[in-house]
Image (cartoon, rainbow, N blue to C red; front, top):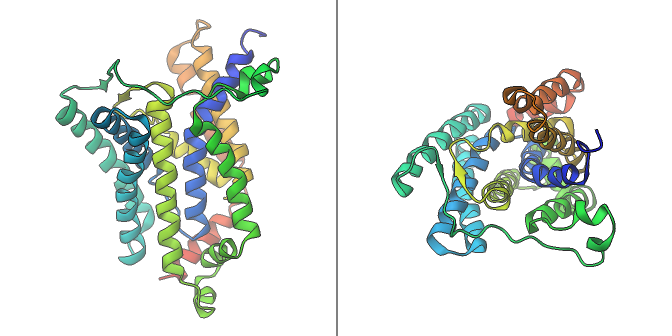
Length: 307
């Protein structure tokens, strides 16, 4: 048991939580403006593939991350245009985006790299690992917290920043108002449509970072469908956290821990398929006990009234 819950498990949890947390924060922003974004899975997948392509073309990991963000922003703009401007059902648009991302990345993998299934190039350089001064010398804590990619620390900082922005700033209150009651917000001169576009595009930035962390911060490769449901888990984390950044972080921590634990259990002679399904079983259980759906109802009403 001590070998199971050791330092490396908790360090792995921080790595596993990052893609989920970044995408969940993006989903929380969309939910706050009355858009239930179920396309997180597709956006993360596009970000993961674009990061590998950017790394292959430029040879720079930071330009690869920027390229991933730009590519995801294009698809986020498409989602925003259809859901906000054309008044299409945002859930249908999000599901369509997920299928589009899966097919497009599979096709592009063969068209660009001429391979099937996975692409790996040993010359590619992944995201650097940062050692935090002073903290890295603290027993146990240093081994858990230090030595991760910059995106891991960025995701933690974003939780605090978004919590402050949403509940302590004027523009944050306007964003909340645009989702809670768009008609009243418009009567006060708040540009609800602009705020909704901004929230979806910011969600795209976060999903691009999530995809880059997945393909460059953890494994430095791309495989077909490598998101493996993390976007949907992020969606559940958004709902469990009631679209509150701190709540979303707590829910993401739970799912990230179960993801890391499932990987660790594969070394204990347990069936691989059993351990792989563990995070998704926990997701279903969490949804079963999630009884306060009032915020989702409010988001739906806000989305309908905005039309």
